[in-house]
Image (cartoon, rainbow, N blue to C red; front, side, top):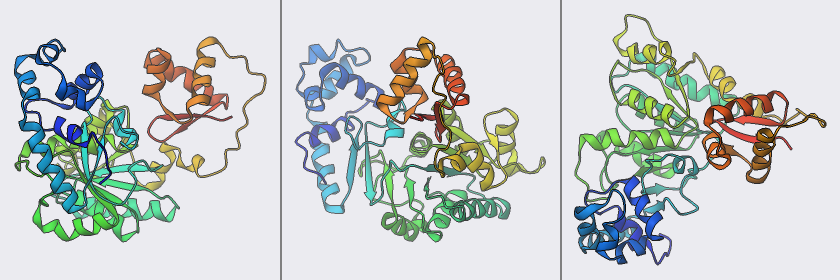
Length: 370
């Protein structure tokens, strides 16, 4: 684990009883640093919106830092690293999500900022149809020449199938856990988890002292959605974690895909509903995914030449200047930095793309051609 004088305070923030990631970020924004949060006077903390008496008492107490000290010992002993949301190494896609964890724990050896990342999710009661679609999707993407990081939740069914097929095809894969790194659930997947650590990693926002709680598995779905350019629902009933993950991915302005199923198939109701309600694009093969994400274009040299004498209006010029300065930029960050509504940014980007001045990348990220 890296030497960081503020590591105790960074980890300590996640142990404050009753505080979530949004309020933790708010605290740092007001106070200036994780250490500053714990050193701030109680009466000043009470003035911060969303904090109040209870949370300010929890912050000035010593229990959170004591718990953090024990967690750091566990991390050092087991070779666990961490990402704090203000640090440069925090996964950039996840950082774009307002409710992303303030700290995540990681045991593995892969980058979480790879060019192509997809999340694959689905029912725990997978059928041969779903398992075959999962297998073919991954193997076909590899055959097409794509190097992709596969993210899933290490659960029964489609999740573990995604991990196994990624490993089989020499792709890195990350399992996002709904518990601490002190255990593996379900235990039957322990051997797969060991392989994942050597060819990707295990990731969680929960410390090793966390109790096994069903609610944690629902909460972790936002990480699965937030880490990736796109979420693919392979097979799902009308209720379940896969649909929650798809909903979260849509809220993060990410691409969502679903494999269709027979209209009378209970384990395809979720996928069919996502497609029918325009919450997911229909895909039947890896070629569909490649086409919609624009990976065909991005695998080749950009041959589109911008028109030299295009006259740009003020809004177009502002977006072009921003992309030239920042490089690859997600649409929500463009809207934030230009102070334009997302709807306006979308229409301007579409026009610029047609003019050959920008290219669209997976995950609704844009880049200037020149």
